[in-house]
Image 1 (cartoon, rainbow over the protein chains, first blue to last red):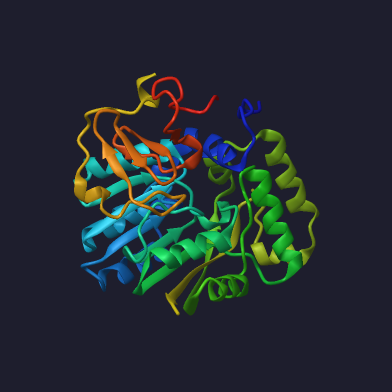
Image 2: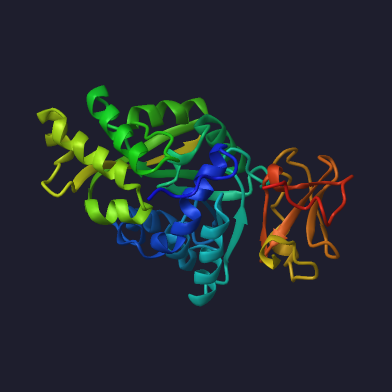
Length: 260
Length: 76
């Protein structure tokens, strides 16, 4: 059973169509609600108790919920109305009075120049259509003493492995744009006026059944991913540690940068 | 259809609008409490506020020379 097609097929509509009905799944997903990377973001936020922080592409809101008790103000920003409704409701339930929600695109931020001390973005950048534009905007809204932290699934540097990652990400999620490698992130950040000054790499285990269920991936796409997993080379199987049930392990990174 | 309309008269904390600008022009916004919209005079656009969340998308903004009721949303 495939989902009804969106009315208009621009990228933003595909993203909204993909994530709107799944908002609740992201609020409760353990992969998203927990993690060492999230602890790292909280540790960075705690060093700046007076900060105004932008959670760029907040999704289910986990960065915002985690850092709100430790900073002065959090703005949770996302393209998806359904996600933001959930975030606003959950923030009220948790008594997070310093978290507000704004809806818009990463590439066109509706904030004044130098209005944030911290810009955090977790598991979002792979949906952005124009990463250079989004990074220029992040640079613009950050104070000179500010800090940008990008936390996302990263592509392996080897094309063989990179291609496999992009293929199964797209099959799982039609709104997938691209996962970048750490070296690509460093180049993108430098071009946008940042000095990349910290990288923490991690590996993330993904349980296949919940990974496709969260996205309600079409059965034909699930079958295609499983078929790919079986037919790929030993190098690919080894890198992603592909299990008999389809579960696998991907690379993530937290990349920190400060304005030039 | 209440979920797709702006909510006139809803409480918008002026402090929360202080860093908000037009995403197109980066110019100032003024709040129109009667329409529940954020007006960018420079862009000639009105951004709706739905369920207390400002919608800062140019595609969903209302051109200022259009009717606020019928043209509040692009056709879907």
